[in-house]
Image: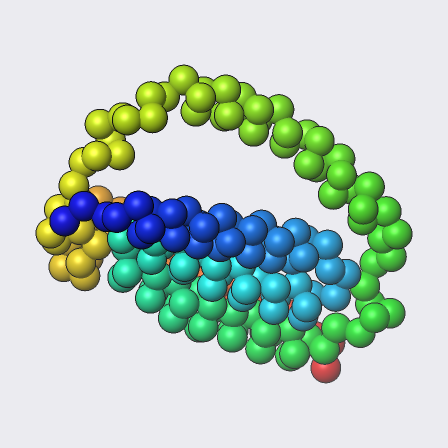
Length: 177
């Protein structure tokens, strides 16, 4: 079933809005001095990413993004921040955050310009855009088989890394008490 012009236009508008939410949330995350507001804006970024996944016909990834990242991992991060009890006096003074962000954006701008130039050379009616999505695309079974066969080592490495990070934070917090 072909999408109507209204559906395509609505998807484009939603994509633009969600993209702005993601970029704004990321900018707020890196510009906050205190880690708690930064973590909360990172949650907004994760929710925006979940919306983008849903627009890309990947509802399982959208649900996992909200449950795992915006839910469990960010709850863990906020818990650790509360456990550390960061005070304003403990934070470094950075009056030039605007200058730092401007320099970072200026450094990244050429990459976007190159991307824009390459993207402009792709025909509007490319075969990739018209390829139908398979019926089992994004299902739990296909994703699970793919993840646990092709990327098992990476998956387990991330699990070990998160566990080590949690233990390290608890040790640091105990030292402070």
